[in-house]
Structures are given as C-alpha cells and as structure tokens.
Amino acid sequence: MSKDVAYSLPGNIREIIIVEESFDPLQIQADYQAKSMGNKTDYGATANFVGTMRDFNEGDDVLSMTLEHYPAMTAKQLNEIVDQAYEKWPIQNTLIVHRVGEIFPAESIVLVTVWSAHRNAAFDGCRFIMEALKHQAPFWKKEALTAGNTRWVAENTKGE
Amino acid sequence: MTIKVLYFASLREEIGRASDQFEFSDDQLASLKVCQLWKHATGQSTLSEQLLVAINQEYKDQHSLVSDGDEVAFFPPVTGG
Image 1 (spheres, rainbow over the protein chains, first blue to last red):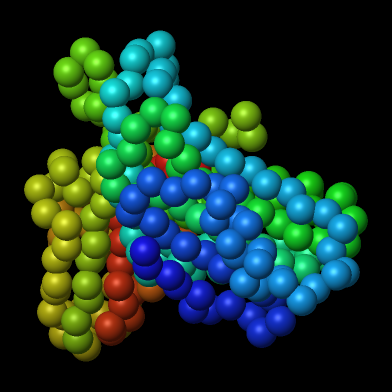
Image 2: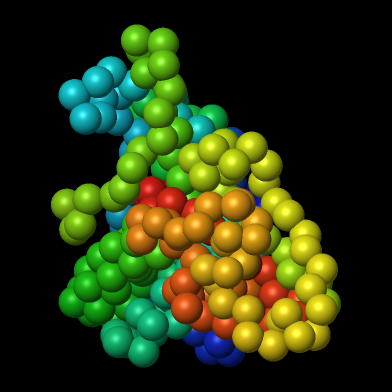
C-alpha cells in the first residue's frame, strides 16, 4: 500500500492512499478515524462516497478492469483538490482511497470520506472532492469485456 | 538541457512507449512550446485537442512553454473514480 501526502497545506488534515489490492472501504474509514480522530469529539458529520466497479458499461458486460495512473500527478492533484475543499467548507478531516491495478465487479474503486461539525460541509465537501477527482486526477480505466476484447474508457460522465 | 516526456493509457499504447528523454540546446529551449515538443517526440504535426498536457504534474496547454528539467506528460481524458 503506497501513501503520498506531499504538497498538503499544514492544518488541512488528509490521508490519500493508493492501493493495489482489494480494500474494504468502511473498514479503512473506521481504522483511519480511530487512528487520526480517536481523541476528537467535535465532529458531528461524516460523509462517505464509495465507488464500486459495475459488471456493465456502455451496454456491454465487463469482466474486469485495469486502472493505471500517473503517481506523482495523482498525489499532487488530489492534494490540491483537498486544499480547495478546505478553502470552501469548514472541514475537519478527509480521507481518499483509490484503487489501481486489476479490479473485478463489486470491488471498491474509490472512497472519499469528509468529516465536519455539520452535515452541509461534509456532504458538499465529499461531492466536490469526488467530482474533482473524476475530472482532474490522472487515472485511466481499461475494460476487459466478457466478449473477449479490451477497450479504454473514453471519458467520465459529468456529474452523474 | 533535458526534457522528460511521459505518455499514458491509450496514448502510450498507440505510441508504443511510456517515455522519452530529449536533449535540447539553450537556443532550442528558449521558446519551445508543448506543441513543438509533441511534434519532435511523435512526428505528428498536430496535437489533438482531445489530449491533455501536464508540465511538472500541473495541467497546461499546447501553447505553454517548456523549460529545462521539465517533466511533460501527454494523456487522454482521465477516467478515475
């Protein structure tokens, strides 16, 4: 499991984890919360988004996917996105986990968790980070179809 | 004066390699734009508007200037998450 927290601003707490094997999003969130926030009692809202691999795309059955990324830019872009979220909302903590490598249907691709005192910042910050990740973070998916061929996913849909 | 060029995903497969490293003279680098580097690297005269460009892991465009030591990346639209 590789970790990269370069470029983070002091005080804007976050953890960004790129994983090469299957992960349990709620377990990793619980572990991070216990480690990073165990002594805190001032957060009242936790918003989670979990992206999971589907077994269909563009009308075709998908057997597996391979996720590639540009590691140095992934770290830089995700840290900038988290910094922007902190500028927009009173966020207390953030966790991003993203899978790379070969992945199968029903496995988690991404987890974004945002903690704050109240739900608006948690919901809005979580959605902002997720949408920005989809359009800025340099990850690419290659699908292996049940029919036997492979293809690169051309682009992400806007805000769906 | 060295420039590192990276290619990702479908573009890497089309080009047939993941990276290049080029040496330029001071004069060549004085006004080298991303689109000129693309032509030098791939032999293709135009850089598709579909492709994205980053210099030192920050998004730029084909008119951006390249400097000594830069890492320039070309890649298709991102599809993470």
